[in-house]
Length: 379
Image 1 (cartoon, rainbow, N blue to C red):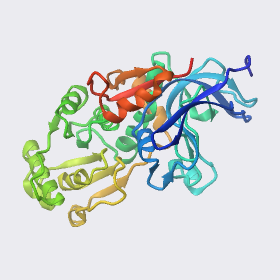
Image 2: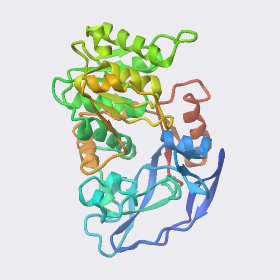
Image 3: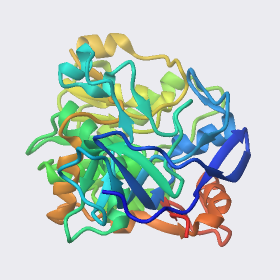
């Protein structure tokens, strides 16, 4: 079904480091099972900012102009001839990674590991900060009546948290969970852990204001690391932070060496910082699970002997996979997770450069702390 002709596909394009422009791009043509979505809300992710300021993340380099954005929701504009589950006017959240559906990862139910994935705003694939975006019909999830389009844009980071806390870490009732980082993903990991029945959730961050927000939002405990001493090796600093956490939580300090009682059943590391990775391994319970979510430097020094002695299960968490989006939507629709407090800033499409600047700085022009910034679709 095809409605009236659409206006131009205005897009926010990254041409080079710190070089962004508005351009009219072609409107994508639909295949039989595709839907064309009029984008109305898009969140800014840290990866978007990193591409803007550095031009690459790991081996993904921006070598040609690329539309930014991948956390989006909108309204179905038109559908391919074989689409049966959606009709024009449906409000949807977009899962922004299209996989081959044929490789071992896809057929094995772990499509997030597909080597052929085309992910929005990951070079060379254009993102969703545009008037229109095309996805296969099964990657456009109809929003329940009780959820807003802003909630829909937040389904992408919430699905990242669901994947890390539920699918991979298997957080369960009675668990003690430590989350490093009180950015959007860290906060959502706390919210998911709480929803899954965690008994204690410790938030770790270097900003007191972020910790205060985390305590109000989902954490039961908070820890502000001390300052690093002059000349102190990072791993020794991490040991000292871990001992501080043990003292706060009533765990034996020998836990840092791998022999003490207590510790975190699940550690979710959402910063990518080396000292957080080290501290997380030190405070994990013997036999516990450590899951790495945050992307920092390509390499890090890891206390591997401690991980060995504790028989830790160490996992990497990359985006989201089968069942994560539906679970995220169900948690939000059931009001088990409130996404509204995380959206601190909203910008018109024409003000996208200012939105990115505020997100990059962590504060707006008035000095207000930024958690999640949303940009409206083009008018």
